[in-house]
Length: 223
Image 1: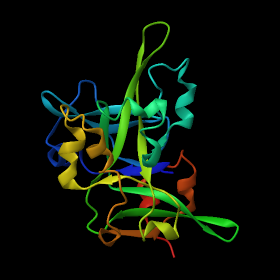
Image 2: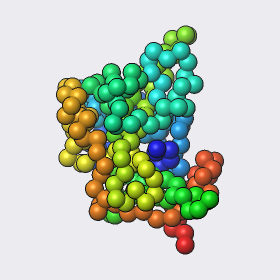
Image 3: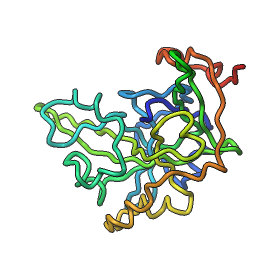
């Protein structure tokens, strides 16, 4: 699964990276320990170009009875997207990108678990593939949420965990965000493990395990 990540680049750099304008009421601050049920920066394609806004992490389908289901839907398996009722109808029209400069995963070491940070070798921002939906409560209040798609691990990740988030190649991002693109089979073909040779991983402090910890110290390499 993918349950924690970082996005710490300046807002202007993120906007430039995705040729994105900022959605109304969007406020940004670096996040060193983004976690489920938080509002996270997301990119969505619109008729006016890419928009950078926020969605709550943990998908609540539009048909859900309440929003508690979001806790259980922080990830969606790429292999079964087209079979699950919660995700199948979103692939063709409600896709998003979650920008990040690294994600955390825990590697088993005997009976202990060592947190790792996984990122690109050049430290650049990269794109996690996601889906989003909007749920309306009985009072008419709308809640927009998202999930991060996962896939099989590449050779770097397989020593750490049996899943990894889908990282889109830069050249595939426009296809993923394209509002007029409803070619589901082509879109599903983008959801594969990213090239391990472009990535690296290192051990980080165990404090990252507590979501209340959110500072630059979490990025420091240990050992």
